[in-house]
Amino acid sequence: MNCTDVNAIMDEHRDTRLTAAERASVDTHLLGCQDCAAAWHAHAELLALTVPVAAAVLLDRVLAAVAAHPRQRRNARRGVLIGTALVVGTALAAITVTRLPEQLAEHIVRSSVPAQAPTDSSRAATVADSGRSALRDDARPSVDTTAITLMIMPVVRGAPVYPPDALKRGVEGSVTLRFDVTAAGVVENATVIDSTDTVFDAAALAALTQWRYLPRVAEGKRVTSKNVETVIRFQLDKPGNPPLLIPRPASTDDPYLKADEQTFTSTMEAALDRTAADDFRGAELALDELRARYELSGFQEGNVWDVYAYLYLVQGNYDRAIDAYETGITAFARGGVPSQGSWLPLANLYHARHQYDLALRTLLRYKQGIKGTPAERGGTPLADEFIARLAALGVTEATLPTGR
Amino acid sequence: MKQPQYNELAALIAPHLNTLFRAAYRLTGNRPDAEDLVQDVCVRAHAHLGSLKSATQPKAWLLKVQYRTFVDGIRRRGRSPLATGEDFDATRPSDAPSPEDAAEGSLAERRVLDAWRQLDKEQRALLALHVEGYSLAELEAITDLTTDVLKARLYRARLRLGKLLATAHAPRALALEK
Image 1 (cartoon, rainbow over the protein chains, first blue to last red):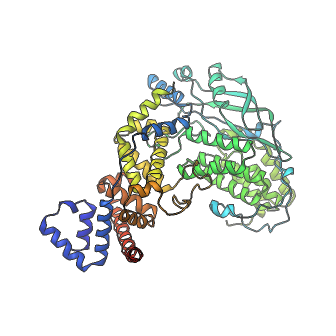
Image 2: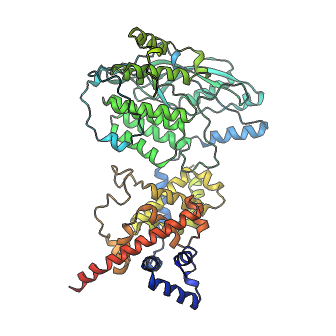
Image 3: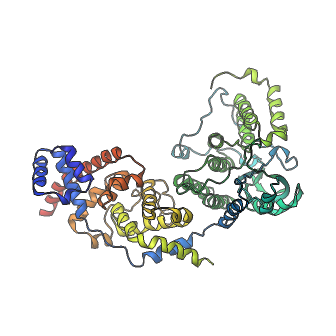
């Protein structure tokens, strides 16, 4: 009998079923082997521990706790979608939702942050997987946060249900909606202003009213944005169609410990509600917990980091905000979805810090990222204008240092 | 409206509640923390009810969630809102056993539990499930580790615990003789 044998006996729970000869053989080995003796002793001690039975009231207590965590809404709707697909006997319809930030001409306010003391523009951006603990401890910089201006950014976008009728007929289409985003980031007064087929209107409205935005910030204050427009496109899953900008919810094969859409949405809503109540720390904690508990999709994680960035930005912590935006963009890329909202504030942050190369890279990355997606069709006037401004400073693609 | 949903959950978890509790008790070493852990697991189970329902082995599903919950070390918000992400035990007021602990465990058992708390969580999680009687194959399903890794970790965990127990012996004995 050697160490391997002794451990195999414990591993396989054979220790209580040994013959007398085997037991004697084990004992002989234990006498000569301190490690095995210690392990055997520990094993025996653990087996000898008494374990009480569950209290009779535990089930009630657990159910009460479950009731205190309200289950989220959308199960029924997802069921409808799948059910319909089966009835029609076709491949599951894919849904593309496109928000075209470039076309929201009126409400877009250019993000601008006050210039800080010039930093060395060659300083590499700290790309952030540096971890929260490292991020959290530095002192908050004393900057004037009242000058911050940010545009709205969607962070919770559930895919709408493909209307069964449209699915049956095999129709694709799009709906343009106009709405307000409150200072808390909630969608209000949503109306359909244009649609290719009225069959899509209800589904688009239903989805939109569930979306949550990071509110616009003007002069350091969260304010309502009026008359925001967005386009929701409904598109079937067939070759030749552009990629989805909102990925379909993860399949239900192995969702546990992955944040399903409901968990994700409710946590993000909680974080945004806390933000609205100026409880930035609470919002951050909600996001921390979401990230710690669940394996997020790239799309979800990108949205989470956009909220972190926002939280840091409104508190005037630009280093962390940059880190968070960069992490978010990386996460979106991992999810195969271009980041749509964070490139502009990020480029502005770099610009404000005189890191013009990094600002230009951010813009170019953005343009590269949306290539081939519907967002490209609307053009990129804001990015182009920003690039032109940088060119006026002598920063162009040709002057970018290579590498990195 | 909500009642049927909870009935469904109750029907799914009730048969395994004691299993979960036993494993949780082994993990945490005391009743209140074990109950909290089970509660967390059930809240998660409810959030992923569809997945639980379609699981071929609900018990393994629940144990896996419990294992991950414990190893991830998320504390319940209500207990300590600032302690997310920190060690499960790090913010306990002290390592002294609670009154309930003392009532349930003998002196010898508390000595084992003291050593037990010094293991890292991964080690505790594995040993606890193993001692509860789960086979290596079952542990593989719960932890997503291979048999070889499992064996190696079980070996190291037992060895460490054994050494902790050996060093705990002497000073305790002296203290008692006074």
